[in-house]
Amino acid sequence: MRKIWFATGNPGKLKEVQEKFSKYGIVVEQLIAPYPEIQADTLAEVVESGLSWLWGEHGKPVIIDDSGLFIDSQKGFPGVYSAYVHKTLGCQGIIQLMKGASDMKANFQCCAGYMNEDGDVTLAVGRVDGTIILEMRGDGGFGYDPIFVPAGHDRTFAEMSLEEKNKLSHRARAFEMLAEKLELNRNDAP
Ligand code: ITT
Image (tube, protein in one colour):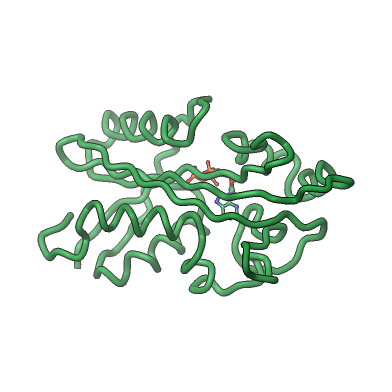
């Protein structure tokens, strides 16, 4: 069994990535190392800066993930501010913001990054489109899952099982791409 460290404080993300990588025979272990999240315009910049901080602090191969909810009619808000908005206003804050809006389209984006023992960085991104609903539905998932319905479905991410969300989410897509880039199917992969 191979092992990869995942620096995250979010148990929901951890479970999803553990499930995703288990099929490659890789154990994903949580690294509790709250890296400073810089204020940047893109998720990728946050990931790159987080990885280089972690490299300085821990010096071991690690993955991180920066994600956000981007709402079309709000010019992409909360986007890179998603964590702060969720912490301060929660899903209810987004529901209030979207009351009266005619365009409910939104997307989740995830940037996943891996840094190997030589400090080389590999990035992968994933996105899922959908709509915001004005009531919270479901007990599963985390964050904005109760108010997001992925396109082509009628249930929110919070109403889906972890396995179901993990087939179509932004994180699922980003980590599948990361697995491909790192050739995790190979036996000598990290
Ligand atoms: P880290 O420790 O990994 O940084 P975090 O929860 O702070 O965990 P982010 O910085 O990536 O994560 O913040 C993204 C925000 O968007 C945060 O409020 C999450 O709850 C939310 N979010 C990210 N992915 C999500 C998903 O799959 N479903 C619902 N909400 C999500």
